[in-house]
Each structure stands twice: as C-alpha cells, then as structure tokens.
Length: 62
Image 1 (tube, rainbow, N blue to C red):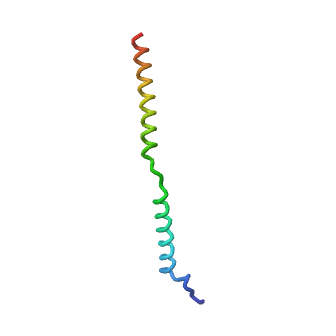
Image 2: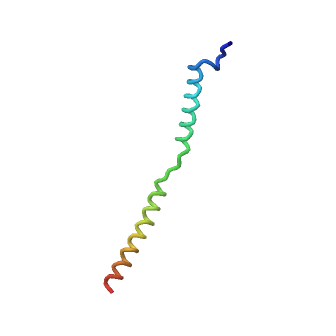
Image 3: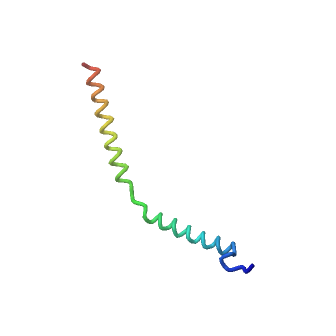
C-alpha cells in the first residue's frame, strides 16, 4: 500500500485545525452588536410589568 501525503495523520490534523480556526475567526467577526436589542426588550418588559402592577393596584383599590 502506498502512503500519500493525505494519509499522514499529522497533516490531516493540521488542515482541520487551520480550517476550524478560520471558521472561528470568521464567526467572531460577523457577530452583531446586540446591546440595543437588550435595552429595547428590557424597556418593553418594564412597561408591561408597570402596566400590570398599575392594573392590579386599580383593581384592588376599587
């Protein structure tokens, strides 16, 4: 059986590591900034909680 360069386990591992690193670097560069989303969702949630508390207080006082 003739061994080729592709059969060499160290070469195959090197290639996979390089491809994995490239994929990881690419993924890190493309992540969007979600700070605005967090603030917006928090404000909407706060509004809903305040509305429910207000309705509950109105219900209890009547």
